[in-house]
Image (cartoon, rainbow, N blue to C red):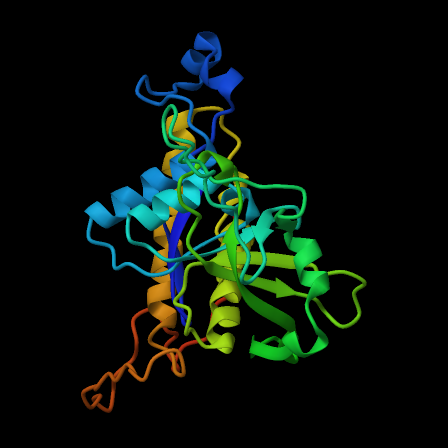
Length: 309
């Protein structure tokens, strides 16, 4: 599991940790053999992600919009924790997530009869029920869908059809005294698909431009590209050990090397308007670089022997 920082030009993992399933974390024999530290206890993936975000904030990492896939976005506690921290998010959710359509919401608590405690919990009835994200998306009128391009791909502009509406999450809100705040539901439904393919919830401001909402949701492609390069170019998936410490050392070295590459790329236009200018002194007439052949002598063959590992 990892946390990355990203913008439109670059991205880099800044925190990473192996995830231990609960039965693995509770097995003292396996923990001892793998060298898992004693202070590492079982936590869900959303809990680990929140720990990484809190640590990054404590270190002064500049804050931005939190992006995450549906494995995290479907977790109501994860989204609520981000909101309590004052962070906005655009997170993937599943088509089955329950939502109140625009203008709808749970019923208010029952009127107090004068006996017992006054009712405080919101209600639902047979006529007033939330919908799944898929149901809501399919009920939208044709003019709710827009064709949006979000970036240039390798050989073409990436574009698709999207709709965005203001909704309220409905997860167990019958145990709440107040409805959840409104947020965006963003849906992607390509023209050649029979049903919507992707869903996001977002707490970006209500006046956020439609194009920015789409661009922000789609920025996660940079993280996927990072891991592809870390595996293919820097050997992230070449680790064959069985130790907790060894893997994290391997990951740290791979990320450090990747950070160097990101830094070097930032000097190459158009990623940055900075260019590297090196001024050289004038060379003397008889100058010959060290190791180069003498033009007045017969050249020799140089054979490089590759030592086996």
